[in-house]
Image (cartoon, rainbow, N blue to C red):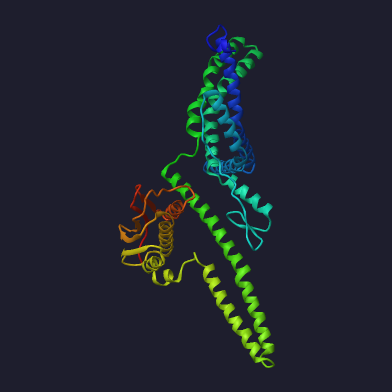
Length: 438
C-alpha cells in the first residue's frame, strides 16, 4: 500500500478510496447531533404547524414567527440534552482520528472525580453537598465532575462547529457518488458519470478540512484571561472545600472525643457531689474541686480546638493588632510597621492575617533567621503585607506548599503573591490583595 501512496501507478485510485473512507468516518463523527437537531426541528415544525390554520397575512406572519421560535426552542433543548452524553466520546474519537491521519496531538484534560470525605457525623461530603452513603456521594461527585466539566462544554463547541464545517465538506464526495449512481439508475448515465468523477476527484481533499478545524477546536479550553480566572477560582474553591471539610472533621472529632467526654464526666461528678453534700461534705468538696479542674482542662481543649478559627483579637481589634499579637508569639524577634489607616473588609482581613501567620511559621521552621520584619501598607486600593527575614533564603513556591496555599487564598480575592528570596538571603514575601477600607 505504501507503493500506492508514494507515487506508484495506482496512487490516485488509492487516494480516492482513502479519501472516501476518511470522509465517511468524518461524516459518522459529525452527523449524530446534526441529525438530532434536524429531526427535532422538522418534527417540531410539523407538529406546531398543525395547531394553526391559514389566516390573513399579518396574523399568518405572527403565527409563522411563533412556530419558528418554538421549533428553535425545541431544537436547542434537544441538543442540550444530547450534548452531555455524546460530545465527549465524539470529540475523543475525532482526536484519535486527527492524531492518526494528521499527526496532531492534543492535551485536552477532563476534570477528575474528587475524593469523598466521611465526616464524624456519619455523612459523606462530595465537595459540594452531604450524603448519607459513600456510594451516593461518589455517584454525585462523578456526575458533577462529568457534567460540569468546562472541557466537556468545549467539546460541545467542537461538535457544533464541526457539524457546520467538517460535515458538509466531508459529505461532498459521498454525495457525488450517491447522486451519480442515482442519475445512472434513472437512465442518465452521462450526468451520473460526471457527478461520480467529481466526487472521486474531491475525495482526496475533502477530508483535510479536519486539520484547521481540529487545531482550533479539539484542543484544551483556550486560556483567555477569563478562562484563566475561572480555572484559578475553581482551584481555589476545590482547595477551600477540602480544607473546610478537614477543619469541620477536626472540630467534630475534638468535640466528640475530648470536650464532650469531659463535660459528661463533670456532670456525673456534680451528681455524685449532690448525693454526698449532706452526708459527706468533705468528699463532696473533693469531687467539686476535681470537677473544677476538669472544667479548666475542657476550656484549654476548646481553646486549642478553635485554633485556626479567627482569633478574638482579629475580630475585636483588627488586622494590625492581631499581627502584633502574632509577632509576640513568634520564635524570632519580629518588628511590625503599619501604614494601614483603617480596617479592611473582614474576609480580606482574615486572609491576610492567616497569610502572615503562615509566613511567620515558615520563618521559624525553615529560614534559620534571627529577626524578621512585617510591613503592612495600603495604597491604590490594595492592602499589602510583607514579611522580611535575615535567614538563608532560597524560598520557592512548590505545589502543595504553604506558599502555594497563600497564593491560592490571595487569588480568591484577586490578589497576588510575590517572592524575593535569593540564596543566602534575605527573603521578602509580599501578599497584595485589592480591597476597600471601612
